[in-house]
Image 1 (tube, rainbow, N blue to C red):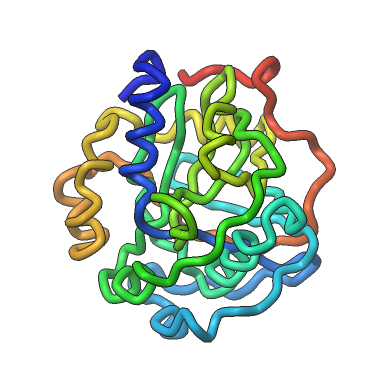
Image 2 (cartoon, one colour):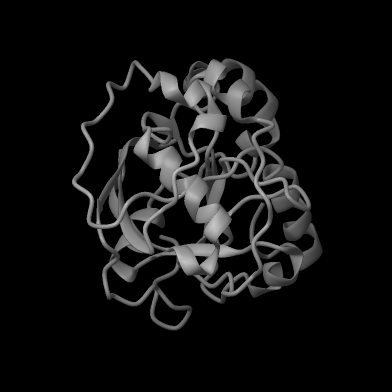
Length: 247
């Protein structure tokens, strides 16, 4: 789906895509954690009820991908429930070895379904309460996907629309982090040749994991590691005026 579609169609697609997981933030000024092996997962992820630690006020998360690296600056005050969830997920390497399954040019980049079906099964109903929408879904802002009130779990999206996705603000999508202009250059390079096709296969992705995506959509990019690297930077997020459009 391209952003040239009607706003209603785009918003509907986002709701369909977002009805699965949600994310949380990581610790400020904390040392980087050791990286989990790509073929394994942290067994603590099988018990979402144990991952309730409060996040720092601000922190950075570095995403190392097959297309390059980018950093998210996370601010807890923007969406405390979402940031706490994201923090715990990153600390336990939920996003490591994860396929970026949705790259809708000029709209969003979305990910958050575990490569391991047993982990996905553990989180699919581990919802969190909504946060008030305090920031707008501008280009470079990061937000949890949602399928309705209080349904966020582990999926997140980065807005890539050069003009912004502010129409999502009234629908309960509460931004909690930003990717700066340099990071968005990497985000814009993520493979988008499959458009919305993988988005429509979320069921098989949940039940079969990365093996399904590797077979059916082999060109999709992968998050090798997502790691807390320190307190939030002061750089401004990418803006609609200054950020380049998709290549």
